[in-house]
Picture 1 (tube, rainbow, N blue to C red):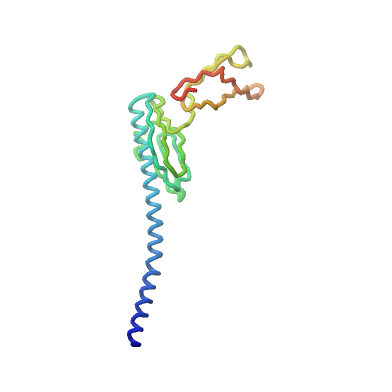
Picture 2: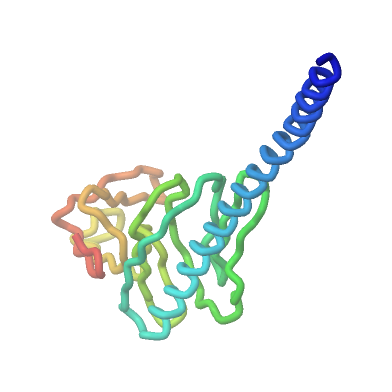
Length: 193
């Protein structure tokens, strides 16, 4: 009887040692797997943004597409400028668009919080694609009554302008900043007010 109890206790100790060895391995591998998954999802976001930017650019000026993306957790920052789209992860990994040479010039603003988003992608002209909702001015024409007087009207051409935006006139002579009445502004573009 005594021998039989000894064997059972040995098995219990051996089983406990195996569990203590395996649990940390499972914990660290699950963490690494989660990080790999987040990085792969970030690659997917960058890929769909660059493919869509190329597509609307190839279709010509004024074309627009709206894409659906799932932003993963762990994104600290982003950069959309020049010919590059880049997401910067919290652990320092930078996820970049791969075919930067074929990507048109891009600018933009995208959300980085985890979640699902619809993001507009607009071909602004022959050389530039705008990603996200960002106001971008392409032309500003002013018609003034005289020197140092409030302009009679201003024509603003671009994208991303919203009804609650206020244009201000800055006078370099006095340093005054004056809000421009909305009735004096003519907006032209896809998101014209």
